[in-house]
Image (cartoon, rainbow, N blue to C red; front, side):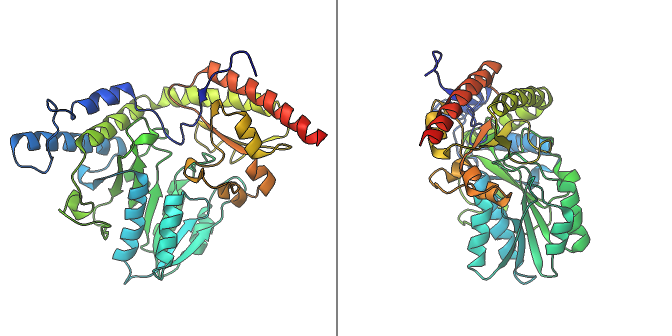
Length: 388
């Protein structure tokens, strides 16, 4: 054990701490002295809460370059993905029953599509190239006359690989009238996202990925797009998402997204430099392989596979470092990452993979500590494997 043993958080892709400035905003809507009233109530306190909700909606719309009325609040990207995919498919069932997605999508997308399969929909599962990219030609080749929806990731949650969304949307528009759903949970706050320019029909976001509260998210629904709601009772959010709006969560979401957008360029440059420092340090151990495209990826995610070690043993040895073997949503599953296997990694390398993700409170000292611990434990585990 190294003498400066401590804990380091490098799992910002799984979740982020709430920024203290966002916490302060949220506190204004909690407690008996706060604006805690139901935003749907017609009395003065309710109207004040509704004003806070609409202020956040406008704030979000400005960042994403869309009209405020296209922003639908949800409990997070998982609900937003489900509402987009199931809602669009069921609303367009008379038009067709074919959906196109990717094998490396987030579980929220994969499982929503599998649920629709059980309802009689047909799913085409695109396989990315070895760098994790989906080509416009591959997408165009998968589209059919009865395709009603295409659902793709903006940035992969395990590798950070960023898709060329503009070319993918063009392929869909040129082929017909299928809707395009974008899962932007990982890219929000890290990339400039202009939904009007991208011309997507639906886009999902989650506040806890950009220093906002867990339990808050949104779905962008382009004007004219019809969805079947997943829940009923009160007609909230244009009838698309029934339930009392959580004013404090929504206010936190709006403030967090605005803060992320305002400081994005210098912060992403800082994280890209830290990520490169981390990669140079880890790769010095030898037989450490980068997963995903070397340049077309988020600046804060580094996913590596380590040859010659047992993946579970490596993560256990590095228990002082909060990182992920795959995605956090799959933590209970001991199977090698389905994303890395789709990129061509064999089970041994996919199983010996680690995702390090940096964030607002990451430092050079954190990176250097992780490199020292990684080098020591990889050498130890390889020596044990050689002696076995």
